Length: 139
Image 1 (cartoon, helix red, strand yellow):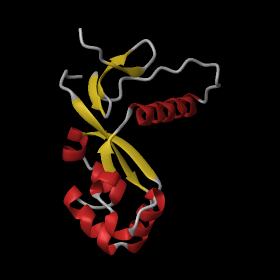
Image 2 (cartoon, one colour):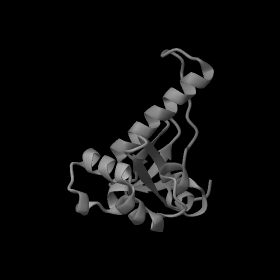
Image 3 (spheres, one colour):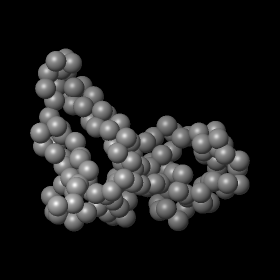
Image 4 (cartoon, one colour):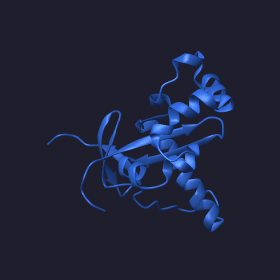
């Protein structure tokens, strides 16, 4: 892992019930946008919102907003610490399924992103002892 500070985003497609976490680099250089939304790039999302009625309506329902108030910021935003804890829970469940384990087994999670990441609340560093990111305190 390199030491650069990557921002972690949460991408949501309420129509397909997909929630995905990705870094800025993953969004730019991998097929994350295509996997989540089915379009080639972020620039295609406004057209999808405008012309795909099912997608449009699912966003309005999910966020309780009026149709013409939809912005890309609802669909792609910087993740929060609480949202990252949801991601950790998903990783633990996936690990348990892979080893067909019980609740008592100890599950280890490899660092899913860079060791240092940016979330809504600030800069976080990976903690190997509890497999989570902790808010970095200035020294």
